[in-house]
Image 1 (cartoon, rainbow, N blue to C red):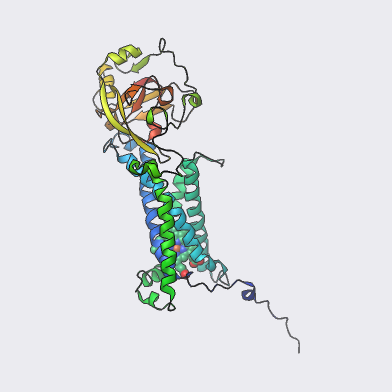
Image 2 (image 1 turned 45 degrees about the horizontal axis):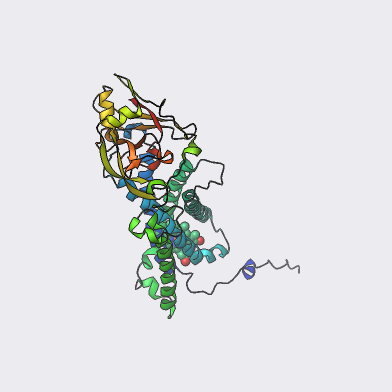
Length: 384
Ligand code: HEM
């Protein structure tokens, strides 16, 4: 009688995991916080995206209040994204033994579920690390950050929903420490898990405390790891794009004019602009990369400049900068911003004339607006 050779048993080659913390209760406990951090990232990311790149229908309805709106939402976006890093690492550590389950795929349905888990992990890792690199303005990839980060956020949202739906029975039976599924775990498991969860909480607390001061200024002194300190920079305010980088150095005030186009176009010299009624406003600069700081601005109301050009009520505005390069050289502003009495063509910052890096001779400052749209080195306003 002929015997076929014995089939290799791959199971024996795979590592065996005896640690009790790679379990569904730990995955649920960490998953809840990770899900919450990603939910905050998604909501605030959508707010940021539409304030920065409003589709046509939204341009004139985006609100210019509250003045601190963008500051709060972008501060939360970056803080929850940073907090998600230790949570993601802990979650992946908890579940990684499942990579070695044999056989890896048991059916077409199971295969599709495995692909969705791969997508979930890839999208999560991509979102948190691309976001983190963006905060230090490092872009080591060939694509444009904003559209890709935005698109992958939706892939991530979809794959988290699918993941939670697939794992729902496990999640429900391990939701609480005294849920029926959790009680079935070996005795003595509780203290180990509590230590792990305390460690993860401490890591989340630590990365938050040493970075959140970049936008939450009462904790500014603890801001040790964030790329920007809100108090460092000319006139007490950080600068992302210098005049040298933008090619806007050495503006000659003898030739500089502010041109305003509209039904009654006109031009103003810097002295004429300074002679117009000046308005003071306390408004934050809130950068998309996460830092923000409130400052004292003074200048001429945009609304008054548009009225002088005969702009109809409710007109929008296009602002053109002197800078030679840059995606935000030309910026458009919807009706709510253009008519807000706090939207200024600022000439002074914190009691002194703007420095070149802050946009000398004139820059936009408006409430509830991403920093990249607070155009510096303004040379022309066009009534829309
Ligand atoms: C938000 C990003 C998340 C990522 C990247 C993630 C990642 C993963 C991965 C890779 C697995 C292993 C899947 C497998 O091989 O079957 C897993 C399992 C699991 N996840 Fe998540 N997860 C996330 C969110 C959540 C949330 C929000 C919850 C619940 C509140 C959750 C609860 C679970 C549970 C219960 C398991 C099963 C653990 C086991 O079978 O031992 N996850 N997760």
